[in-house]
Image (cartoon, rainbow, N blue to C red; front, side):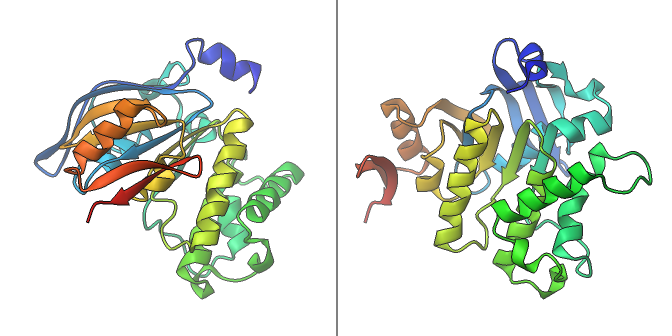
Length: 264
């Protein structure tokens, strides 16, 4: 973790939110949410369909208008210059759009734009960051292929590489496991743990509850509100998780890992 990050987040909070409300159309989706997401940890946001998970993540990324206050690394997000915020916070959303005729390499290079001067060519550091990101997501071998020629899973790995290439301190990912097969879902899990070990902060929205339970902290949502936030290993978190899904799942210790199994 850099000294700059330590000085900006004295109280070890990567993202803080106070009294967040947001609407989609004329419908209020988030209702007065306050939470603090810890620095250099992995937090997963879970809940049933329509809970407001993706909307909350977009608000935390600065992508949706809202009432309330969001702070990134100790600074008010509303006052941050766009380029500074884009260097500090990386975003991977659901069904991300990108030009199908761009190569995988060029798509990943888009993640370096916040670090480049206007119309400046990529630097050697930019190229090195893109290569690291594509190798980390096992997308290096098709770096010269157009995005439109890739399968859904391959495309998702390239978009993940774009997010990694930013080299941001905070990464927000909405359904990052979409279209990934089980081995590459496991690779994603290992990659997140490496990022956190290196001092990065990861916040993910996941439908795969057993994967979400591998995080450090869990934020449980229902009806546009946070019903619980706590460590994934805590019994209170397990009870809150079972309750929000109407006790149709149970949390169990399986070979030293917490997993969620359906109750039949």
